[in-house]
Length: 364
Image 1 (cartoon, rainbow, N blue to C red):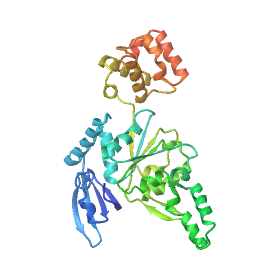
Image 2: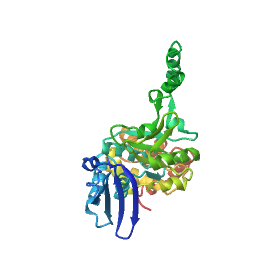
Image 3: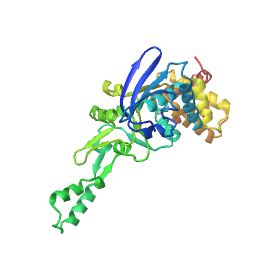
Image 4: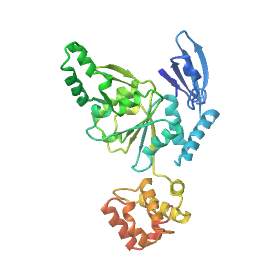
């Protein structure tokens, strides 16, 4: 658990970042956690005050931060142990997001593993995953909280026979936390035990109004409920946002986040993913699948297959006891990795023209 940060000033120069955090109490300093100040690779210079401790954290530049690089490699190793093939860019983005307490916006094509990062991070941190699936029309009542109206009505009926309690007291009772239904955002900031991972999945599908509503939460990690008051996060969640870029996100939201772009994997990386995720797949078939899908991504398709489609195809071929690709097998399994009729017709035409060997060439 990183210490609670009340303010943060970042000064960039060619040699290092300096980040000044105010730590609320000394117990935070002593907590043992993989992402505490000491293990995050920062060199603390402590100035003592009556109310708190102030840390000046120096983050060395690339090539000079041995401990920082060790932490990045550790995250990468833990993710790969959890069967997620990653690289230093992903591990570094996650490390900085956790250490700086900033949300991480992950953009990329559909099916490249954006959502899976949140699932793997949850297991790496041994915490809870709270997921909010965004969609058009999503509002604060669905994402934050709503009142338990049936329970409130039942309470009112039970109190109708009693005239002892003042009306104001009875009203206060039914608008208390006991009658509050916490939705994902409120659950994320009221977790009493530890920082959960909050996944705002496909944030680009939500409306601009909901995006604006998120700004206060991502800035201060607090929400205001008129009947109760302001609720502040006891443990700041680790926030990941994913986007397929179906619409452009606002600059205000982007400024509050660190950013990571996930592209389609290279042939070598996709081969590693296939071999790791589908262990029963032989190497020859894995190479043919990776090469074939790489070729499809260079074509003008309506729905370009991602890693998820490659894995679906690989698992289907294992079930069919395939050992290598041939034209008949490809034709019979097109629906496992192509999800549009025009794309199926286009690839069928390629197969009719005898271009399967060209489609299975790994590189152009």
